Image 1 (tube, helix red, strand yellow):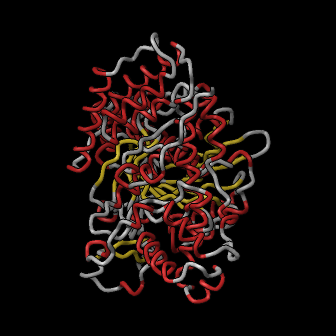
Image 2 (cartoon, rainbow, N blue to C red; image 1 turned 135 degrees about the horizontal axis):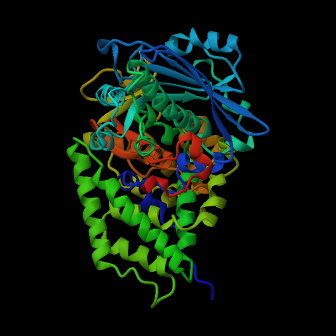
Image 3 (tube, helix red, strand yellow; image 1 turned 135 degrees about the vertical axis):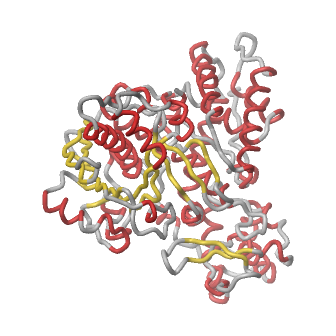
Length: 550
């Protein structure tokens, strides 16, 4: 009889207190980007900066069929003008991914538009846009050190982890950029967020080239370049706020694919009958090396400090109490996973789940291409079905939500809206601030409960007739039929509850990006680090996929 395990129950996994404990893994987008593009040619095409590091640079990524280019504009910025907030209008640098090799006219056209961001306009030739600010303390320290002929302080670099941090990475038609449909069928960027991952990776290289350039111009006779090993230990920071949170609500089919692939990878690994010593060795090495990363995970957030402390305790418990030997039993990973469920917190469980994927290139490799979704195919509502069937779908798919009491104030505390200044999602108290009449349709749990109550009034209608009289709930009816097919498409929590922690939503998404060192600055925004430890541009073809644990 074939041994089989079930994928984990969506009604348990899709709770925010668990999703907010997800970590990067071999499935994460920045890691799969490195694997997929390691055979491409990365090149610095133009580097025209003045002695203070201001000017233009162009980097290209090419194979035999296609080229993408990052155009960088570095600008002088007074300290009083520097802000990580999305409402800022000036940044230390602005970047755009151009489809192909840019002409001189393209570079000049974009010079007059990219640094302006919202005020400027790109064209269908541009695929993604970003802006970034220096970590001034670290950047200046590195310049001063290199220009005086010595390497910067390693501990400072490890603690911060980057020279620049981006404040946004935009695509899919914003600011005149190419719409997604123009490029979605290109096989080399078929994976999710490939262009955005490319942009961030190339920006990282620019930060090294810029700091070396400034140091050389400052003291050409005595300067030294930033050490390769130190460079490799620096990534790109990012400041991320509420603008990212509704994405996972607004894209249920895509969310399902991300979670489903992760759950399918875990299922297949748990079903492995015989684990080799080499596979176990990879797991152990990644576990050992990753502990150093956790020790360098610094934050001023008490919320995050508690989670880091719990993670450390879980790992210590796992190493001291669990027998990491494969000599005595079959289905080692299944037993390992069951032990974590019985003995560790969510932080520890999801961390071990990520590590279990490390030895299995073949399993992960065939699953990564499934992490995109054509959401249009789930748009139609099967109006020929009955309201009774719809009610049964809700009972099966939303038991946690049906248990919520929306008659109490706590369950209705917040509302989501779009800010007038920046057209970005925000959240506010319904009972303390005006504007709830402009509420966005993101209160999915409340609307599910309302739909269920209305269906209970008459369970024998045709769905088309029901929608004639309940058109205000059409968006929720559609979601129910999405979840019927895609069980991991819905967060099983109340997005307007008084106790909502939006950073759990941010961390969920960022874990799939491959972010590290989550550093919440409130319950609504946080800083992260990306590509720390990744191979540099000149060595990407030789990269080892476990670089993230170095």
